[in-house]
Length: 167
Length: 167
DNA sequence: TTAAACTTTCAATATTTTTTGAAAGTTTAA
DNA sequence: TTAAACTTTCAAAAAATATTGAAAGTTTAA
Image 1 (spheres, rainbow over the protein chains, first blue to last red):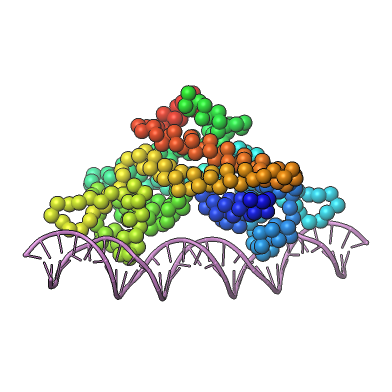
Image 2 (spheres, rainbow over the protein chains, first blue to last red):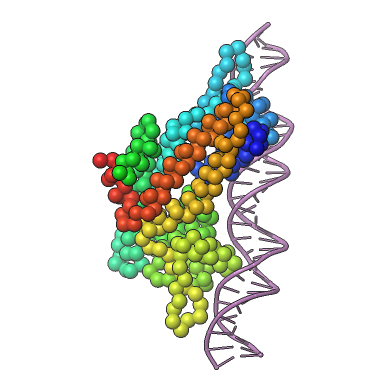
């Protein structure tokens, strides 16, 4: 496998993986492209490399910036914007974990809380609903607080956590 | 909020959450319905409750069985099949973690391994590709082995792991 | 100012994913 | 056997999601 092939394979693998971490294909591919690029890229270069439209590039780059994964690089004397992504995988993982918690897990916890606190009319089905939503609520809270604590450790959190956990 | 409303809210919340753990809406809704049901349900009852077609019900129940989340219950003297889901949330989480690792993380690790082991021609861009895919590969491996170890702990793994990790 | 060089927006279009429903398949009891 | 009671399959349709591209907007330099 040569460079070009390997690079394309990486971008497409990472792209189709987008759904796993909750972003769309183009967004994931742009991030992948920047991730292995040796220098910041401009809109035009991204369009060219991924064969996607200007509009698509613009919107998805904006979203990546929203997520805090991509930053604008201003090159002195140049008008156009260049983009680069966080290159440290652990930092990347921290950002993603934090955003997913905020965007998805937290709202679910809130909803489960609401549901599990409906009035208990004593019927078996109501009690089952309360019991099961409470159990899920507790699981979600535990998982989220785990995520949160992980996210607050900066350096080498994953490795450190692993060591603590299994020694 | 009354029982029926609460139940519907639970099913729809859980359903739209499906994407978070990698399954489609109908599948997640069926699981949610069974999760708060006080007894196993037949195809007809699921169709009725979720207003989905027979074909859709059949295929998604089958997938849930594939995942190991739902089991057939044979009621003596009845021909039709009844279905129920794992009711213990921790066991549920274990099954999901295990399946996602098998279906998604493991194949990605393999691909990253392939890409990061291309021949180093000495050029800057090749070295960057190798370096970055290696970093992702290592992160994915660490995360997956963490998941794997968690998954092997049976009782109260989440709580136990948390305690170990943050004390 | 003006206009060139860029970025953003969004309605229309294309693509992907999910769902339907009717036909085919299977199982069981008589 | 047969036929009733069920389940599965899958091509077509619908729904959801992503993408395009041209027009509108913005910024900068002269």
